[in-house]
Image 1 (cartoon, helix red, strand yellow):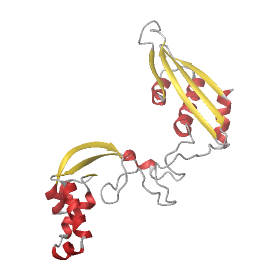
Image 2 (tube, rainbow, N blue to C red):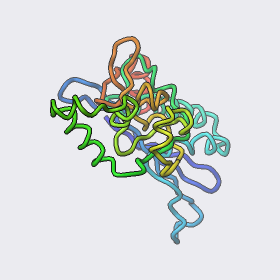
Image 3 (cartoon, helix red, strand yellow):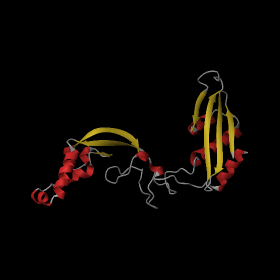
Image 4 (cartoon, rainbow, N blue to C red):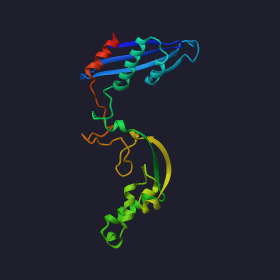
Length: 227
């Protein structure tokens, strides 16, 4: 079932399209989208204000609506849209522990100062050749460099790492990212959420799309909205 709902204030018109459908796997999925128009400028390019996943406009739009019944309906739609839109496409598991802990952090990308691949090739050659390995001892600190690779990303500044790393690596760039898109690494990016295991079930965030059923009382509200 689907429905287009129309709301108006003194200057704008808001259409909200909602749909509830049952997929082949019997998963009941809700979706919503909105289109906001300026009713006073329909004849020029400013007619369309926003469209698509624009649920963030609803709280402001509600303030301009006079009909109390429409205000209540818009509040209901906003809440359902926010929590249940595409409920079969959750990046987190049902425990949603990682999903709720996202934040912006600064990350730093470091690169090897010299010819990393030449160093790696040399160390590998020595380790594989029994005669060379007996006559040439590789410093354990130098071996550590191989674990960091040609470049690595971390949320820690360079002075956080061993001195040998500080000596052979330099800062290439830095930027701010949301931890939801930062791959988890216990030593380098512990704040990262992507692929971080859930402490309850072990599922790694972002490795599949997961389904969460819509509660029966919410399904009833969606059905009423579609009438």
